[in-house]
Length: 100
Length: 161
Length: 170
Picture 1 (spheres, rainbow over the protein chains, first blue to last red):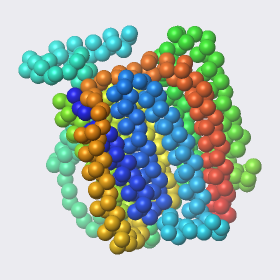
Picture 2: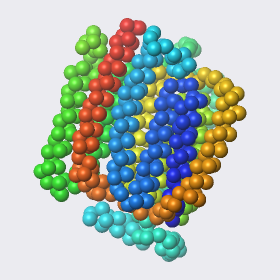
Picture 3: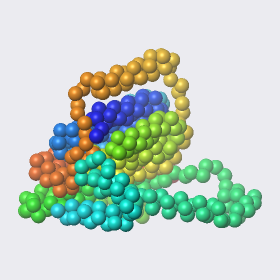
Picture 4: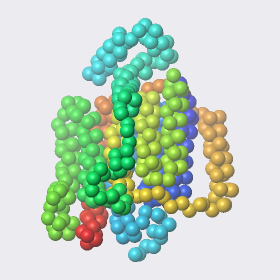
């Protein structure tokens, strides 16, 4: 028996780590990985709440989040490649113009 | 049903092959339906994998001869001394294949729970998966026509269609 | 037993997440993210979501992270340039975050009124998941295929632009 709040705190910590990485990292790929970390934190709270209220739809939601994450990773990384081809850098501080 | 049979089987067989003390310990654990015992085969599998890998690496490290010389330590034992970065860039083609792998991996993951309950869903299940795969196939034909799949296409054709 | 396993895997999770922040090279961050995802799969198993755990390993740790590592190698991403954050971020941000975290944990632990979770309390077997997915969540399921179709097209278009740029370069 583990209190649900333990799971929620763990998911909160993961989400906070993701936000922190999003803010302090300068490499665009690492920033993207921080977003994945945030998604994982949210997934954990979905599964924990599903277990708490015996509602399986929480786990279905995790599936949809995973599908969205896969689509997002494919498109996002393609965008990163395109950015790198035009800017020759992965540092977000140097990608600060809307136009080339 | 079948999964439960398998689980029971795994439970029985894993309990039989263990000394009494381990079985007692597992029985004493205060949880319904001996949840952890169910994943004991997984744990054993994991331990065997980790153990085998570490034993092999450690043994080769302990037993193997190591007589490093300057020629052996150089990246190439003959030819020119290498210049520049050792990491070379990969072509975008690798990325395309990886990306398509992800997206069709997602499709395959959805196929699994569908296949398990296909009989319960009857024809309805067949048609919903038909629509799903048909939409995927549109994407598949798109990348096919786009030339993302032919590895050694003539360079003029690729990317400009 | 449940609590011990939860704490072990939770510690692995948090350690991986913190390591992701501390590492300078993106490939190290990617590998620590794989550790986080593996440990999270174990947490899902503790909650009984066995199929979700398997999909977590297959899709997240197996496919998405492979793509990340591919891109890191593809772009030959090196050490990350550090901009040593502003002082106000250290003075206000870090204590503020710690304070917020402690406050949130305190509220969750003492005043949330959420109950206890038994180990494996909601077994999410493939059968149950499939029934719900193909019966109750039919429309979202079909819509995901359109989403993935759009993702395929978008990624191919973006990548083929990059490829033609590669051709021009050399």
